[in-house]
Image (cartoon, rainbow, N blue to C red; front, side, top):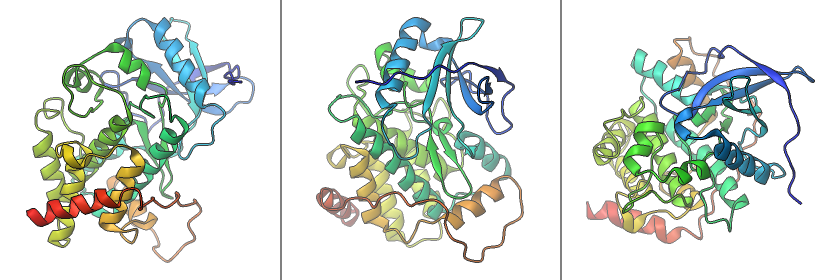
Length: 342
């Protein structure tokens, strides 16, 4: 039997210091609310009017939130309340995601000219794909995307390497708008794989959206409204050049091959799921290129803070499960052949 969301009441407060106002573009305006019964702080998304009539939006968000309520998922900020504010605007209340929204981190990085090391992009990419693989596994059989609304504003990163995904209930809502790929990007900064006509929200969507997040990381900034999808090939090439700076040329070529497959610029090698994409990334670079210390140093540098003591410390967060390599061995081989042809 499907669980229903518990009742929560509370009052929204001013935006948290690290939460950017993303209305527009994006899914709405972020604030922090206090639960009236427990006093706990919760993240509040005041949903943008660009999604249309609040009634079907509310129904769609509630259905997805209740669908995943009993699930044990990696790296997800559970939705605890869907309700209307006094002004009639739809609000989605979620458990507090501790850390820094990637949208804010990239704004700091762009302002200070801080580059993203490849190790950081690979660590964040691996954990992002692990969270999406868990979500897609829980949502198998529905035919819909596991998330469907991933952008830099939906990724929260903590200094201990913990990655949390938010806003996982909006994919079906966006699908019902029946917008083109270009309009979804311009209105909501939501990336989509190439499609004839209206965008299709399936598991490939999550992979493309994760790839654009990784591209933004490597670029050190969020792609502009006029850069996607028209200039996606140039964006991916520039991201691979920047991310591959100072590393062997073959690693730079493997990075470009993976990005092209994940964004479906190379449709023959496109990944069908987040698990496939994660396995191919691990196959191309291994796990030795990922790690929490690099993430911690990068986050502090983007905020203009001095480095911390880098002596070995125990990692308090469990590593995501290893990426499967058997089902996607052929994918990695195709990537290798693509690199050799170049």
